[in-house]
Each structure stands twice: as C-alpha cells, then as structure tokens.
Image 1 (tube, rainbow, N blue to C red):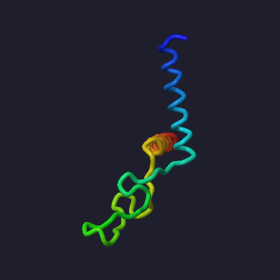
Image 2 (cartoon, one colour):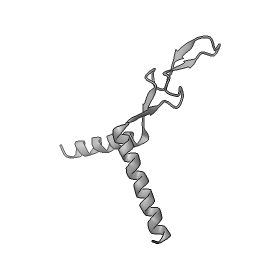
Image 3 (cartoon, rainbow, N blue to C red):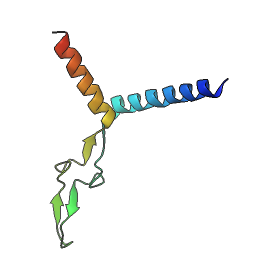
Amino acid sequence: MTPALAASTLMGLVTLGYAAACAIWPFTNCSRCGGDGRRPSPSGRAFRVCSRCHGSGGQLRVGRRLWTWWRRIHHRGTR
C-alpha cells in the first residue's frame, strides 16, 4: 500500500468516526466552564452562570453545526 493511499484511508476513517460522534453525541463540554455551567466570580467566593453555555454546561460540536447548516440549506432548496 502506498503512503498516499494509507494516509487518505486513515483520513477517511477519522472523518467517519467524527461524523458518527457528532451524530451520537452532538454536545461537548463547554470550553469556558468545563461542563459545570458556572464560573467563579472575580472575588472567588460565589459562582456565576457561564455566559457561553448559559448554564447548560454543553455546547454544540463544530461538526454538528456544519451538519445542521447543510441540512437547512438542503431543506430550503428542495421545498
């Protein structure tokens, strides 16, 4: 097997794996609060709701956002 064929096969498998992960688990932990949904206040005594995830602790994966965008364009184009 040539190196180019091996590399393209590996890239295809990684892409399919990421697509499957986006379909099964569309949300990931928020990058700002780490999935807690809250952040410490500047004083460090109290907690505030995370402004990025609005307290849910999760955010949509990039691949899922792309999939939703593509489905929306397809749906609008075939109506």
